Image 1 (cartoon, rainbow, N blue to C red):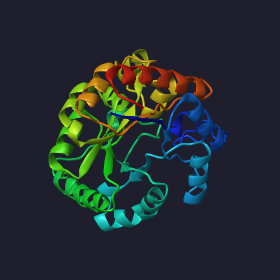
Image 2: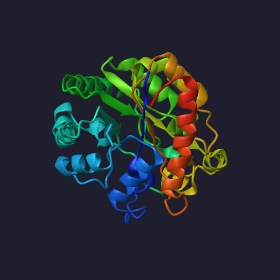
Image 3: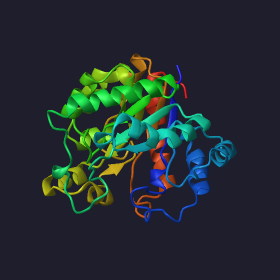
Image 4: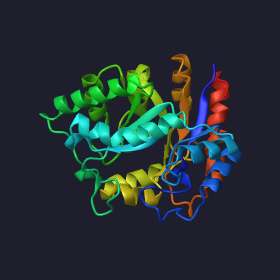
Length: 297
């Protein structure tokens, strides 16, 4: 059984803080991703919003595009308003043959604001859950009908952040709604990330493999830091350089016949963490576990 291993361009250029790697050409990102061994790369802000150019670049560097982040404001929009806002992104992803629609709700998100600590992140109120998940269900059905299933990204600083949020969300949404499973964000939110994987493996269609530096995590939690300051301090890193043991996770994926993408995604300051060097560290670590488990790449 095969599994696909890709990377996110955020290691080279940060979309929330363009000053981090903003001068790095997209060609450098793509060539180094391929050099490190990856067969796919997610859509990022440095890519032109032109499917013809994207396809040319992907072909040039022999890469696929699994999907790409979409920042939604569905909490404060109607389904029709959100669908209209999504259309250009949907069309772009279809034309570059992406497999999933990565969906995150940034309504009230504090992920880009260094002045707000994570304890003040937005939360869904008890009377908001039903209507919100009803809207998600409608979008999920529409995306499924287009052949591009929704993959909901639980994310620090947003309305779906911790394990309790994930449990409620998955319970109240339909089977066309999938979870983007992100190890780093779950551990940062103090979730039992292995339990989340076991509980929802059949409804996970995309995975971000992100590691955590435990000492920075402890500092962030102790000082109630903002998300931005936490990642600038280095809370995230690539698999093999942090405290998460990915071996039992990969074994569970193999047992459940998961054959989709694993994406290494770890936002760091590229001046402190050389993107190519860390891409190679992450690839070497995951590749070893993947092959030992019985997968082919």
